[in-house]
Length: 317
Image 1 (cartoon, helix red, strand yellow):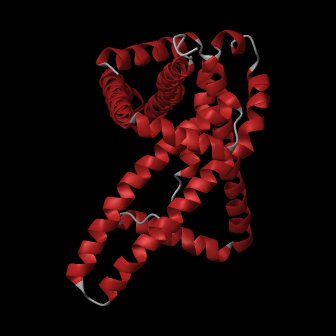
Image 2 (cartoon, rainbow, N blue to C red):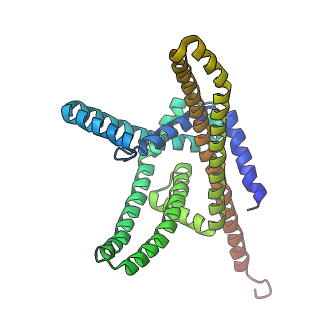
Image 3 (cartoon, helix red, strand yellow):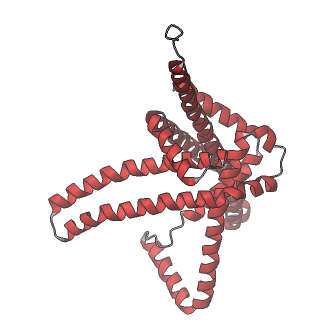
């Protein structure tokens, strides 16, 4: 695949998502689901954070029932957002695949249609996740055992080998999950068939897939830089306003202005990340369609060659 084709995919995905802003809502749901799945309640930070954790621990000990209720509520909310992320991903795939049809439908109707693929995609993610977990445990066991025996040379060698296996496995699992999801949604295929087809596609397009992954990493970095730049510009613009608010209302003016600026920045980031989530999924869909089409073309050529080879020679007849 030429460089121009990657840029063409990015351009088409940009205009498709920009002109069809209903996709941003699905991107917003994906963003919420991604944030909920990355919550880390056991994170240990600075001294101030440790003091906060200590205060929360004391509060939890004194209000066990309330904390249990809140914990259960947050757990089910996180699960619901995770499932909603899968449905929203399907909604973007279906919509971007046939935008002329789906832009005429309501968001609720699209989500209802996308819901039928939820359990297949959930099973796919669980299958890949459990397989990775078992593999990691098998690789980590000898490493931990060697470290407990204080055989540092062998332990570091085992650790290096484990990483050499783990990193390619993580990359493979990412692409298998991505491509198999497209197969399941676009052709309503079974999980096993989707995984086999996804592996075949990835195996024949490893270089292009990795390049596409690097391209998306670059777009993510550009987006983050743009958001930081936007925040800096907002701060520069609000600086003289903040100075005037301080002269007129002292600290109260600064606090009010800070809240307003924070709300504006948070709303802007939400819109940007919602669009980017839709854009990201659309880019991967278009890339998948292109390499899958290349695979189908190769199959047709091969079939034509085989058919031509089976035509009997008239001279023999």
